[in-house]
Image: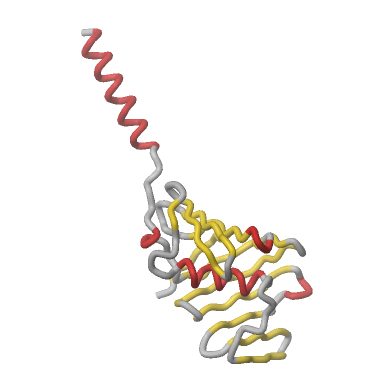
Length: 167
């Protein structure tokens, strides 16, 4: 009887361990069309914003804070546009400095969405390159949503949450 209980206990223990293991996500499971909130830490300060990305070079970022920049919107599409407080400008190319958090986030998302652009580091972390610099994506293995983007070259770390699907 003790042997049967010991074997049953071992089976239950192994079943519990396997249930706690993290699912492995593939780069093809990552969701690249979304709207979300982002908190971005840079060497120059913190920014809160919303990020919307429908496809490569079809995206927008709207700054929520700091309050001095609340409402500033960067839009990538057929052209690049910046709008703020009723003023707007557009150009055929992105006019932001290469080190800009907005240019880097959209560039990384576009680079990461390409086939075979990411290397898996572990169950939920991927690395890739953009503009001759490395970046890291941490992804929720259940939903496929990007939780964090790190771009060490420019000291940028973005935490993404409150996802909404684009349909």
